Length: 196
View 1 (cartoon, rainbow, N blue to C red):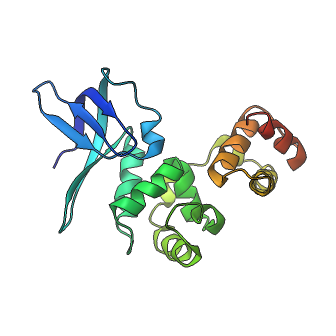
View 2: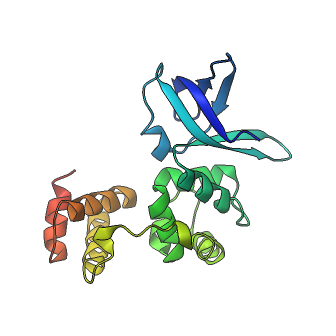
View 3: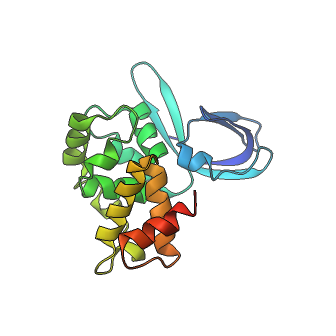
């Protein structure tokens, strides 16, 4: 099994990337969009943690920047009805800790923002995976205090009502909270709107 890959990034497309090792072998990998956004431009050295998935019809190699992402992807694949394509879509919608929190908290609204996941599938996946990914749901300091959680959730819902995609609203609110927005959800919303 291929566990890590170190080489030069040759191509960086939304569908796949190619990495050439020092031995001249070129590997094609699929990566979530949340990983793709953090990769260097082609021509630069790169090291990825990988997971090889073999099915009846294909062999695929998936790439991740850190071990948390790879482990979450591995656990997503243990749920019934979750294959490589859906797991990739889930991790393309949310960064690994946020996705794990959505599963643990059974945040169906967040899970339904993932392409190919409706209400029933979100319920099933959350029920099946919630306990399995609890150790991966890293709680960020801004969401761990008393208060703040309710305001953040209300702010995200308000931004979605204003037309934001859920992932964008969630990111903007977290950024606002990290930058010191506190108190009412209105203040958090105002600060989050400034990041648009």
